[in-house]
Image 1 (cartoon, rainbow, N blue to C red):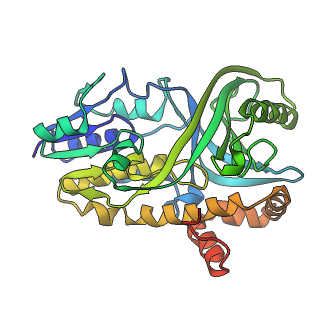
Image 2: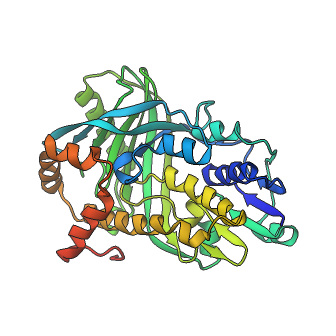
Length: 367
């Protein structure tokens, strides 16, 4: 057995680390970029309510799989704002992590736990690697190969604009905005990276009614709202923009001896756009299959269900106006919000999506 891992992102590195821990060293990781996480800096979150019944995803990865991550902060407070309402949810809600060209990015942390060398600036295609390897782990970070192989359901695309801002922040408080005035049918958020630095982002689906939106105008409107809401003068020190990023899901998790992992598989959850935990787990589970510890398609079945539930919530969000967001945020206030987002044994995605399906309001595959 000779294994090629195509991509040194979260899933590719997780696969490599797990193979090494199980005594398999005949593998090579190929990465097209200059280094691990050679991309813009941004913040992301591990939200406990979305990973139930796993209460603490960081300790879970450590204790169960020997993958050690250090977040930039715990989420002890989640502040959610709509146009006219605000709620604050407190508890052990999750973790803030950093991605991109920083030494403390979670991908860089994982790279330091890998003993095997990575081939950087690789020009090898999937077709090239099939000629010299018995098994291929597709972990390139996007859906291009999955779509090319007709093994992907594209559900929608999303555009987002973000930046790193300097100011004064509570590194244990994360903020989100549900407001169509600057993220139509989408969401916006602030993730603190330290006491003096944070990542702010607006993201919205590329729906027909969003085709002619002025991205810069929406961004400026959001940036001003953040400064007003936080009563903080901020300096924008870096920015990034992504348009028409594909969100979807593989039809088959494995075809022959090719494993689809991470975003090649469809690890990004449509509801809030994060998928780090599932990306890491697909890498681990693909390695477990190769080590004879289970069948990949069965091991990741829970993530298939999570994706479908998340897509139902995504479709629901697209139907909501600012009055609906006000109603939602108002009723998340206090005890109800704490139960929903700080009760880790409740599968939040499953419960809410089943309610929406039962009343016949939303279907995950609606256009």
